[in-house]
Image 1: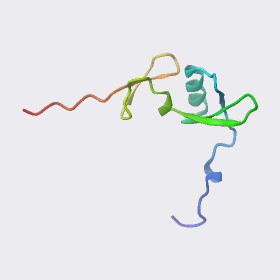
Image 2: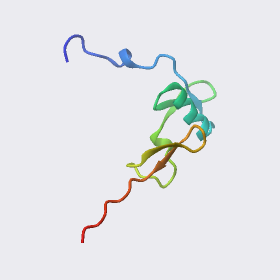
Image 3: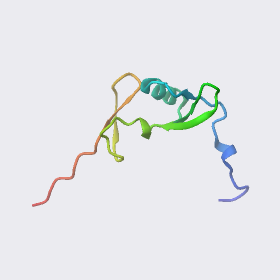
Image 4: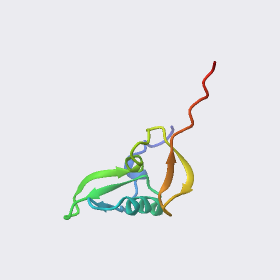
Length: 91
């Protein structure tokens, strides 16, 4: 890469959207979808960051890390996730 080294401040989201600890799954997914981000900070009642929740954190229980999107919304905001089809066995 040529020129000035890039820093996080050059690419970060400046208008930060956050959720509280008690935010629901659908609310969090809608916020990420609407803001076009893959993660949001989680804040306490005083507005202090206490964690981060990402798309990967919101995968339904039982999904593997290799889950893929089917592209079909199930709840209007939440993507439907499925495991990849297993490869056929060779005899």
